[in-house]
Length: 376
Image (cartoon, rainbow, N blue to C red; front, side, top):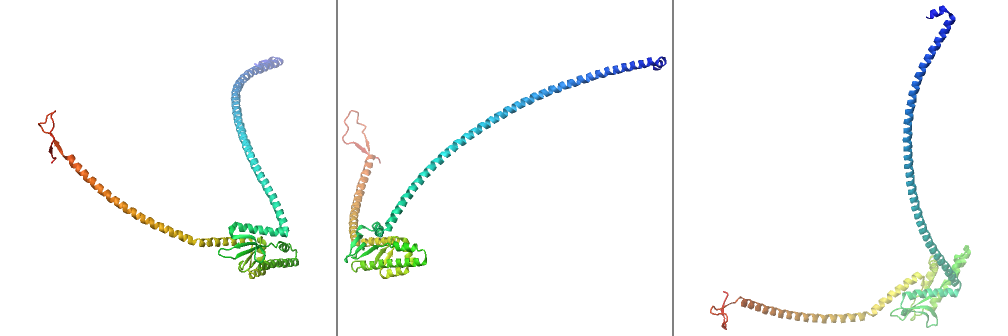
């Protein structure tokens, strides 16, 4: 056909070919367009299905998200509530502990306040004591009062006397009377505080030697005065006591001044501190108790003899009572024998069988002598 067309007219043939090409192209376009529409429809269906699935997925996700949010909100609420409760409990506990701590702090402050007052009072007492010790006369009275308190706490009132005037006209601070003896122990209180403080406060060796010499001189004078004034044969014992109211001075004398201790022993003057003086008082108190017991020994023996006589009389009366008991026991045995015999006879009488005669009729007088039939 194409050959015919080309043979007939080239222009016509060309136009014809163009038309045919256009027709073919149109047909192909239409055919392609229908396929495309089908594909598009299919894709649109798929898109719709995907959209539906996505909407379901989105709805499920929204529901899940909403549920998760609700769960999260509920958990958050529970945690917030629990946290609030714990916080409230913690605040209450903290408040209670703070209250207790404040109360304890108040008590401690009150204790500290009382302690401070005690310290202030102690400071006043120390100042007062320093004022007393700074005066020589007051210092001597302080030593005497301390010695008197220890004597009064250890011995009975009849065993001592204070400020006693001796036969030589000298007055001793304390005279302790010994049991079964006319002689007493003289006690005199001395307090060489100034010379001892000078020794403690010495700044160099020269001052220390001078202060030591002064302390040695004061103590030797005290020892000599006590030996000369208060050791009187027949009135006081051959040994007197020098009472030092300071343990520190007493320790320094024994540690650094052994010559003074030796001199005191030779002069028969015993240097005592509060501790050793209390031990001496306790020893004297024990001796006095032993002496009183010995004095009362004859009374104890007399009471023991009287008690033994009472025991002897009690033994005699007990033996006599025992004899009475034995006699009563024999009488009781005799009574039991008699009652036994009576019981045997009553048994025999109970065994007797009393038979009634056949001639006896009701209403008739019974014979005064019944017929007795033994049980045998």
